[in-house]
Length: 330
Image 1 (tube, helix red, strand yellow):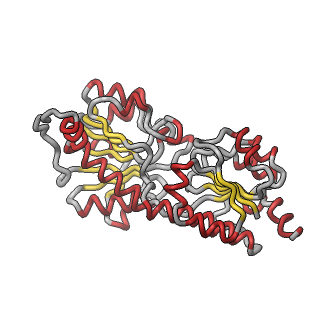
Image 2: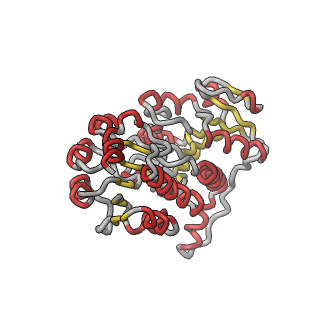
Image 3: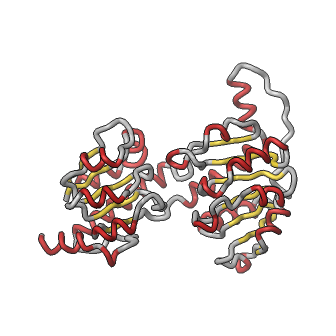
């Protein structure tokens, strides 16, 4: 089995420092020959003859890809988010699509907590002043203990973060129309009530058409004056123009974000450069523990296919016609 890895050199080092050797033990691995991310046309040319593409989150799975590579049996994403993969097109071509295991929960939740503390205590602003050679003013911060945090979306990250915040003396309220948080001792409330009561708002909902621009001008108006917004989920949850206006007016005291609407879900530079904004370039899951686990997810999936087993976390197993034909031909 020939496997093409789309990761550019930086991402390859971050994710496959240890797992690459294991993947090479079971498959013939072809590495992205460029020093950057590939376009779809470049990927089609580079992955010709490969049965599997293992794709970084920055590599979309477009219709042309599945139609142009007749030998391709699987497209495996080393991330959980598959929103940039045309699963319908893959299914129509008989290509199985797989995602990584949810190993990023602790890493992402911990970054959310770090960003929250940073924006509340002006850590980055003071650090930048010192590094520029100037003495920073003693900017007053806000204590976390005693505050109210609103967690929107009580999934794995929401649960982890809610528990951590509660341990730090924070009152946590939750809004999730699909999951009951009361069994864990958290108050569940409406979206509007959460916004009105929270000092810190953490949108952790999945990205769907219903959650697009979940935090818009109307939501920001409902939020209490002086609240802080922290986004480590998806960039499209925020209406960035409305958030910028709320920062400019002073209604929003601060913004911390690890995601945005720039390529690879990175924060938009114009918004990230504003005063009272703390931003990191989509680092939520980028710890050695999580990166290695996600890379090993793809190794696990390749091993499964070689053993005649549907890869774990396949999202369209019933349409994996090319994989079944590949098994039959072996």
